[in-house]
Image (cartoon, rainbow, N blue to C red; front, side, top):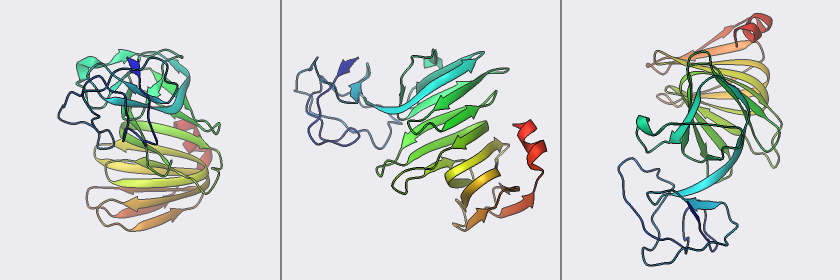
Length: 231
């Protein structure tokens, strides 16, 4: 892995120091090739680094606060046989996929002191939007978030198969199971948008919504104390 120097680039664009670029199907859309004739730079201190096949890796600034059991991670564009076990010092790059096995879990810490708890048998992809909004993609499993109030109107989004939840200053849980995306709000504010219908629903504390393949947002009440025990 080599560090790369960037000149006014953003998330992999306009970087000046590449050794080579290797194209591969499924590459993230926010990662683009650089010139193949430039030379490596060893003294760069920016966030852009390069993996062994030529992708620019951008530090998400999310870290493992703790984990237990078997927790693995790999680039989202790689195959499942490339998963590697994590440790507390493992950097988490954008477009990386984190997986918890049975009887395993992980606590992810954000720079604003927000935390997300990955439950057993869950898969999560880490992304960051161009407006610095953090975005998680919950592929399967459950995720519990204790999200602090963001600065400058920023928010965090969690994308699931059927909906996207935008949150700020919130205690919230997400569940993705059998093609149904569910959100449980314990405190704060969350807006849920159906991917299919594009309709948006604001949840109040004590409300949950499940969105199926038809895209319909179904809102129900739930017991917060019992819900907290579930997650």
